[in-house]
Length: 374
Image (cartoon, rainbow, N blue to C red):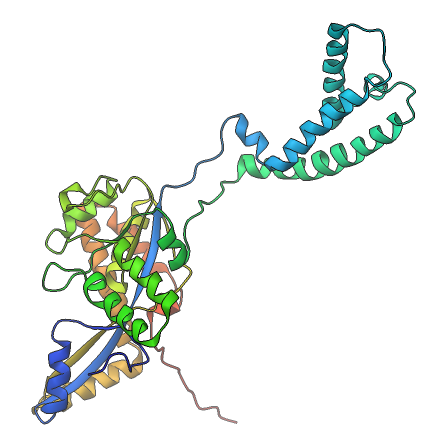
């Protein structure tokens, strides 16, 4: 079977899929197909919740460094211009006057305008235009409009963290990337099968940029073998511990990313979100990786009976709800083992959501057609 000629270039045949295809094509009189399911690979970034800004640094954030530098330079420039033409004064007297003029220019900037501020330049011809420009540009535009309009947002609103949202940004970042999906052997589905198949197809098609990107992605991935220690691994990531027990140096108390097939991805991201001590940000870019599962059965006297019943369930939309209930059951069971009581809140919240809150979970929804009578 030539995978590179398939529109979906990196299909991973789970378990006995290759054997199943062989049985269906060579011995179709004994075996018949039940279903063919696709499972997309997704990624999310897990990061600490952002905190409100504290300290004096928060008062400087509404303006960028260039604006602050321009204001400071302008203040000193006006102070030195105010000393032009003043002769016969000592150095100490000059420095005292420059310091007072610096206070006056900043007072104008903060809206504290009085007679002393406006007498900086005395009767100099260039003094009035400078004061007008400083009042209009410095105080009115920059401070009264831009700074005052933004400072309350910076002090009250919490700025979301900046994390990679695409595969390219994720590969270029220093954020560790983990995956847990495994085959029957302690090997990663992504690192061992899905990504190498996709990279192989890209090398044949000549897509050099994508080839380099996904090769780097495969090197960046860290496989965590938790197939027989799911509960222990879950406790580790929820307790924000190092994954040293799983031969990894990833620190879950810091920012890290998870990339996995949809079932594993949904399980861990849902638990992290329900735990409430970490912010889970889903990637905005779809990955080109997909896992395929085939289900087949023996062609005997019971096959048509089961096939007919399954087709009725599929047409009514019940079958499309099973994956959601199955995933929710795994999460509820794990939460019950971890927290004993808290899982009830998650289950009540998940069951109360509208069925179409996440349309991507369902392939097809039944359409009810009613006959209209005149």
